[in-house]
Image (cartoon, rainbow, N blue to C red; front, side, top):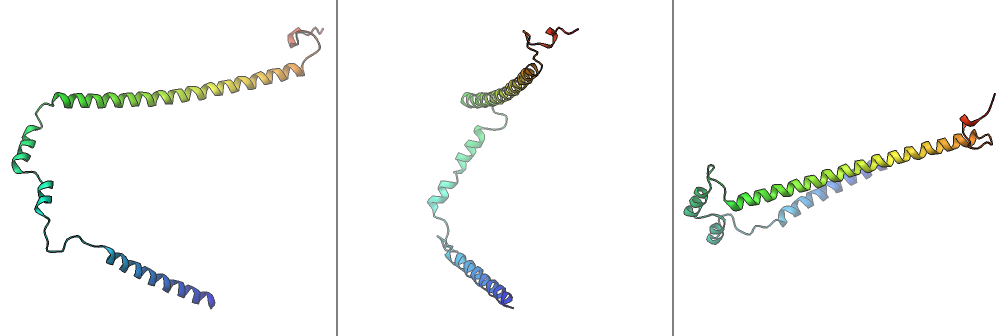
Amino acid sequence: MAWRQLLLVSCVSAAVLLSLLREGTSASVGTSQGAGQEAPEGVQQQVFLQESEAWNFLRKRSKRSSKSRDEVDAESRQKLRADELRKEYHEEQRNEVENSVEEQIDEQEERSRETIEQWRQWHYDGLYPPYLYNRHHI
């Protein structure tokens, strides 16, 4: 019975807290302008171009017009930079792969060398050189 009362109290307190938070956020949002007020004329002129300026801008660059030399140079510089970055990235990736392969080969050589050394020590018969083919058994 006590856990039901605890659950009920916590749910009611959560509901009250959420309703207070919702009212607080809606009241805290302020508006800089009233509902009937328009934006000042200076702001509107900063955002929108004059009709003649907009027409000149659109007429200057149509779909069929050629690009200026500066635009072509800027695009070529961007492409060259992207190519350089791509080349560096692939070079780093290739170096990482080569290093990991080289490390694996070195580890394998070390393991095989240790195995061969252990085999030679185990089969050493006191003769020099200590190889199996050097034994003189009849």
